[in-house]
Length: 74
Image 1 (tube, helix red, strand yellow):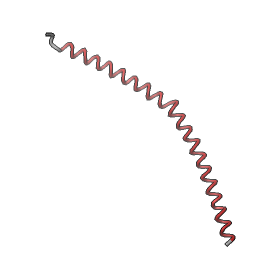
Image 2 (cartoon, rainbow, N blue to C red):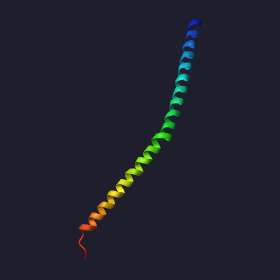
Image 3 (cartoon, rainbow, N blue to C red):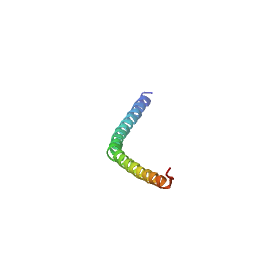
């Protein structure tokens, strides 16, 4: 029975070591992902969103001009 306990403890130690290594990797990868999101993706989305809003504003201005041209004056 003593041999069995030793084997269980060794297996448990290996599992704990593997889990600790995976946790460290996940933490590192998560930090890198957050940095990418904050440094690259968010600014790109903001930039493209503002461009899209400017294009939409221009199109709305053109539409308003067209409506004014075709609206009879009273």
